[in-house]
Image (cartoon, rainbow, N blue to C red):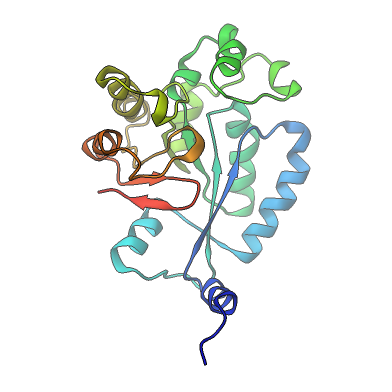
Amino acid sequence: MTKPAFDTTREQLTGGHFIRVVNYHSTPRSAEAELREELGRYARDYAPVTLADLDLLYETGTWHKEKPGLIPVFYEGYRNSATVAAPLCDEVGLTGWFPIATSFVDCDPEHQEAFARAHWISLVEEDTKGGRIAMSWDEVRDLSTRHVVYPHTAHHEGFDTVLSAEDIEREVVESKRMLEAVTGQEAPAFVWLHGSSYGQSPAHDRAVKDAGYRYQFANTMIHRVN
């Protein structure tokens, strides 16, 4: 008799065959206690996932840790990703994954609120009360020594609005070059606004592949590209 799909999935998950991805955006200081509790529960039930862990999973087809893996993803490049989320990941023993909209970080702090509101970057009131909204390049560099940092395009764009060759170069390629210049490390992954999947547009897929990304994060999966 064939097992119900739910039972099979549950056995695979508890057996450590899957990685769970949890998405976050702004993580304000006012929600720090709640986030600490949530990440602590994840750290109890899941194993951290480094870039090397993800590479090994794709190379071997086998998850090598006793617990399922967890990737907490903190989007956009908010300052509080560096000052709240990352220290909490350090505290509970999780590896954070941080997709950065590079032009948001590069924007003058005086104009970051306007940039955010013009580029689909959600703000809570606390974000607008403390000077910089985006992390600094120094914070990006420091973050990359302990966690995984990679581009979320330059201007927080979806592939459906990035149409010309110049637009693709700016959002896909230049964002990678900028991050790598700052961190001194490879930017291994890429993600579009709205978490669009690899395979929806040959031109955009080709740009992601040619730029040298290994992974594309999407809402439903992590695509291995190269």
